[in-house]
Length: 303
Length: 256
Image (cartoon, rainbow over all chains, first blue to last red; front, top):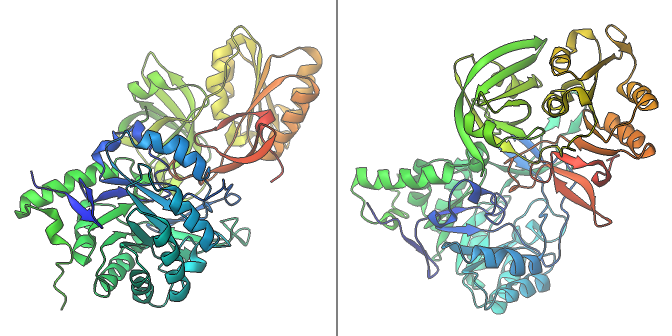
């Protein structure tokens, strides 16, 4: 049995497998299938200062090898997370990543500050949600505002800070460098790619929000490319995500430069995807004589 | 606990054009399942599962029945699974219908909303009235199932090609003019559900409706299958997969 442990910004994970924010709620549902303690960590549902109702339905559309969603950060708000979800998660023997989002810099800083002194292991600042009108991707598509919000949240929290980046930009390395300079301890990428489907019978978009975020295996090669580009541009650790569905995908993402990974949409096809991926990583390491999985990060040999 | 597995289809038939009836041998799912719950069914080559309501449960034989209509390429793929082959399902999911012991029920299905009425009507047997509505006789399904369980069986078609020429709401009003009911169950298009709920309220009868929405995870984590509901006097988005698919009619906000 090889060692699957990885470390990101000083936080040790028992393995690099983390369900992605928005795909896993706060763990209560998937715990009906398997214990949460098998996971490296959990990135919880994007949490805002106040309760959010989210966007009108339909909020999902299937695509070739993937899906669009336009949930719009529906969540119960920070107090509910801290008082109801976090105490439960803290008993599960896995790392807790608090994914936070806000409409203003002040709101994000306030949210991050609320995580101080709690069981949260790491704060993931979402500056890339494509489904909300204010905040979200508005911060993450410009290096100046991305740096500004990162600096404010960095000041407000004593937890390791990871900033989740949007792929809906011309050059993701510019944003990554900006948040690194502003004090981010890690970056996670990619959030979903903005997409659209139309029902040709009605002439209407399938999503009531008209557009939504594309995820699933369809986006995987884009995610690998962006992780590799960012790996070559910054010195802070990267958590890679976007379309991962198998252990081989995890290896590929790690070779591109990720220290750990997040997995979301794959769960909807197969609720046991995370269990199978962890088993697959052990098999891969055994078959290839890898003692420490962490050693493969960034080992791609580019032509 | 949710169960995911690959189970054999032991009986398969096409009961109308594009409507399939699968009997699946899955004892642990059958043991846990309640009328009104649903299964998330994998369609080979498609990313998302398809939610299909459980039509009937036979706990002795360890089987469930899924009756579904081919609506697109995914359900078409599912319809091609052969008898004897395995089908990948997660079930039982969501909340089932509430049963009133010793009560009388009216079970109303519109089109492909009819299948979940079989399981709940069976629990009432002769104390159930099953009202089903279809566009025409060629797609009028499951009427023999309702008759076999002893339910008073009323068929309505939009074009009068079978049963009563008219809507399920007309049939419901006629039934209520002559007899009482303790609860009404309904599944079908939103317009039909709204009209049934209005009649239930006028008559002071409890009503449960089963809703449909495009779904992702099916277990309550991803929050895509939102539906407008009222909780504690406030309108909120609930989720069909975990909070439903069966809702008390007073909770549902129609008209969106």
